[in-house]
Length: 361
Image (tube, rainbow, N blue to C red; front, side):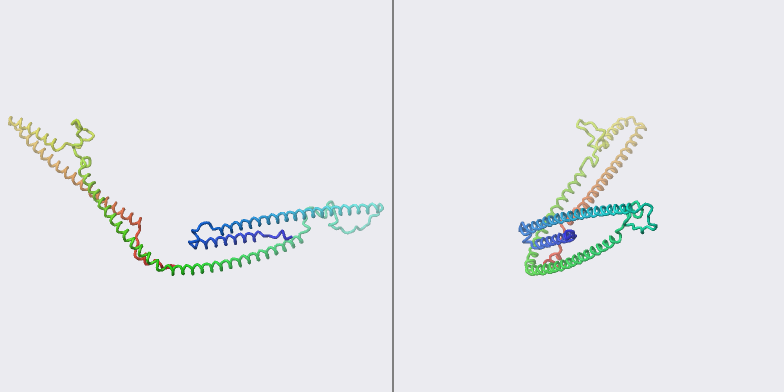
């Protein structure tokens, strides 16, 4: 029956061919910038609508074929049922005829040799044939082989047709690439002079931009240097960083223990003066003990002066090391910012402009 022919592969090939054609047309439109920015592609939309209508018609045809196939299957089933019913009727009629013949034979006059047994004519009770036997094995195998052979030839023909279509598609695509290459070469030849002019204008603009960037970098460097000097000056004059002893004095003149950094030089000198006054008061006695105490006080003053000088030198060295560390950190930060700016904006070499208007294919 023609309605039972397998057409799934043909429909799939038609669908793939339609998709390829649509993609090729879209690529051709995208190659031309004038067509790409015009707007709605009316021809493309019409093609899509026509394709959807054709697909809808194909689906209707498939539904019709499916209905015909189901009708054919129902007809085959009814025909098989009629054949089985007719076979049963014939078997029942033959059985009745056999019984009639047996009844016509006189009693005890049975033939000594019965006819040979025919399994096809025997019933199930004769144990000559059984349900489930495959009596149509050879005919079925022959039909299966013929069917496989037919399917194989059909698949070979479909594959051959598919390979031929692919070869034709590749040829058309190669011709399309050649056409695009020729058109691109023609456009490059027409626009060759304008490319050099645009390259020169772009070069001048880049030079102006480079001068502006250099001026901006110089201004940033000067501002950074000013900020660095101000920070160093602040670090050197900050009472907290320099451990100034005056920060321990509260507004009411009392000393805060949590802010105590040691006695100031004036306080230390006042202590010395008080001690000298005490010594002068005891000098009148002229005792040897007072003289020794005076010498001891002088020795202590000398030791305190030396210790105070050492503490000042140590604080100065600490401040100088701190200043050097800050300067090193600022230098590292400047290098990092310079590298960041270079990596952000990039750099254009002369070779970049020389390659304008040249094809690299």
